[in-house]
Image (tube, rainbow, N blue to C red):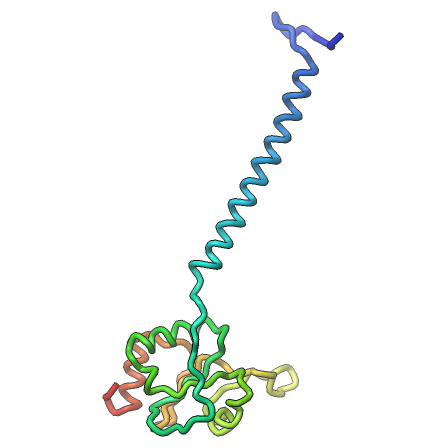
Length: 168
């Protein structure tokens, strides 16, 4: 016989209460799992569709500097390089810019040639860290003026205008 007790004028089946409580716990676990899955899907969606896609940068290392107005030192995973490269494309400046991948060993000669204009990260012993170049770095070849960091389209236009004598 099922245990029953009287509550006011109503008889309540205790086993039914326990079963309802167990069902509520299961439903809570299911709801939490669904919330977790939903949050995970949002994270995956953000990672795949909202983050900037990788850019196929050109690497000019080994080519002559002739015909280029500036150097652009970048790293593939650098989000600031990505933003600046996009701004350079919108202003059609990539054809005037010698592209240097800071992590490519074939670029070491040009990086060494312009090491006075490139800032390096140093470790605690004041020794250059491996691939410690600050990026993005843009160097005007005619004036040797250097800009380190991301530039907006307006700042890029001004930088290239000063670099090329007003012609971009």
